[in-house]
Amino acid sequence: MQETKTGVLVVGAGIAGLAAAFAADRAGADVTLATKAERPEEASTWWAQGGIAVTRDDPEQFAADIRDASAGTADPDAVEVLVENATDAVRDVLIDAVGIEFDTNGDGYDFGREAAHDEPRILHVDAQTGKHIHVPFLNYVADETDITIREDTAALELVRHEGKVYGAILERDGDWAPTFAGATILATGGVGALYPRSTNPDDATGDGIAMAALAGADVADMEFVQFHPTACHTDEGTFLVSEAVRGEGGVLRNGDGERFMPEYHPDAELGPRDVVARAVRSERDASGEVRLDVSGFDFAEQFPGLAAKCEGHGVDWESGIPVAPAQHFLCGGVAVDDRGRSSLDRLYAVGECSRTGVHGANRLASTSLLEGLVWGLRAGEDAVGHPVERIEPPELLERDPDLPANFAREKFRRLRRVMDQQVGIERTSEGLRRAQGVLRRLKGEVDAYVRTRTSRSLYELRSASVVALLIARAAAENDESVGCHYLADADAAAADEQVPAESP
Ligand SMILES: Cc1cc2nc3c(=O)[nH]c(=O)nc-3n(C[C@H](O)[C@H](O)[C@H](O)COP(=O)(O)OP(=O)(O)OC[C@H]3O[C@@H](n4cnc5c(N)ncnc54)[C@H](O)[C@@H]3O)c2cc1C
Image (cartoon, rainbow, N blue to C red; front, side):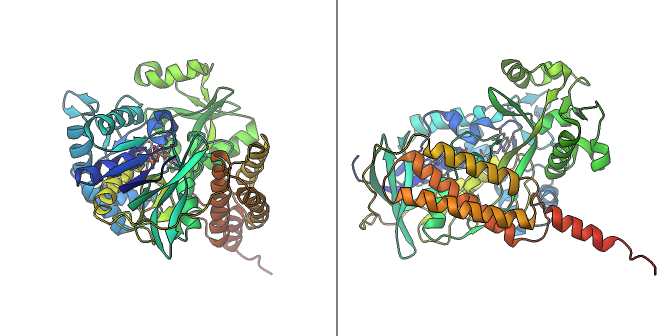
């Protein structure tokens, strides 16, 4: 592989990377977009179902909904940036440039409404909005711009020196070389591969967060891992059953056929995701299973894509869809400002791998595509105009063909088990302490291999082990249950404090 140079290097081709590349190209930069994906389905963007929220008549209410969903922890300035730029970004880029036709009804756009949104404000295409955005956006970037696209090409390591980033080492087919860039934008998505059950694509190993953290960039809010309450797990894999199904009247029933959500939250099935996820888990533990009863409305008519998916997975939805929580989204990531700038010079992060402050401790549904779009555009624009400088790149070791085939598999199994049991939907201080011990040892074992050989799967494993430790550490340092960070022992202690002392 040849050493190359580019004005702006974007790593990742989900909505955030595409938006960043689009904006940098429009601002006149020479742009390279590298993605380890070979197919669009390897980005979470492709899988998004419900849609993308936009600002309608009441921006203040949209901002309030985001802040409320985050339990008051979202950064108000970041929320304002999102809300103020939402409609222009969607209209100018997705509708006018890329030509996406969001669903309409007789009155114009058919705005959908999801849990914790005060009004219908979600643009969608069927219930498969992600692929209807992602594929045309990829085609637009390939056909209508001068962006150089490098598929099946993974960034392994940042090229950096003294707080400044000069590009990244890119790998393809076991061969690698540096690409030097005036600015580098990480858009590598989420961390689903750290958990045994996730709605994300399999290779969401948190590479961008790991590369940035190893280079010394600040990361924040890593403990806030969101679990979706209703994923369906079959031998064929895991798929998400969107909140919109509960919005239409889907009802959760335990193994005894009883509806249970009204006992857990006044908004029942439409309560906050973390509350519903914990309730589903607890009812499954107690009664063996939880099903989403969709008999109250015409499921096949309203969700044809989901009905087909159930059938493809051998699920008889007429007797209720079996559901369980699954890892879904990371609210934290590389800490960035309102233009996606990280704490390192010339390094940006956008989309799910970044922490803008918009989500705080919990994310409002249908705001992450929007965050990726808005921050992608702002970062892409800001990243233009820096000189491309060459420095001595880090030396990676020759590939050793003798990497044991089951090495990564075994380590991933161990990592996922500890993340699921100790750093999952419910945590305890003791569990987090033990998890850090296991993860530190595991990272040590992986690092020892990374020092002797180079391969993409080994670097993905390294990313996963770095990010897992960041999550466990952040969770251990936060002794307050908030948003999607739930400490069962803190909760029990708080409950104890409220019990009145017995009279003598
Ligand atoms: C099933 C599902 C449903 C969802 N529904 C919605 C919804 O309705 N509305 C909403 O707003 N959000 C939704 N989300 C969340 C949303 O889809 C994601 O948060 C968002 O798409 C993330 O976009 P991104 O561009 O940051 O990352 P992604 O779309 O995940 O893209 C990451 C890209 O980075 C590449 N990459 C990763 N590592 C490397 C590397 N080392 N080198 C090179 N390339 C790399 C990947 O191959 C990929 O191209 C959903 C998510 C899932 C999984």
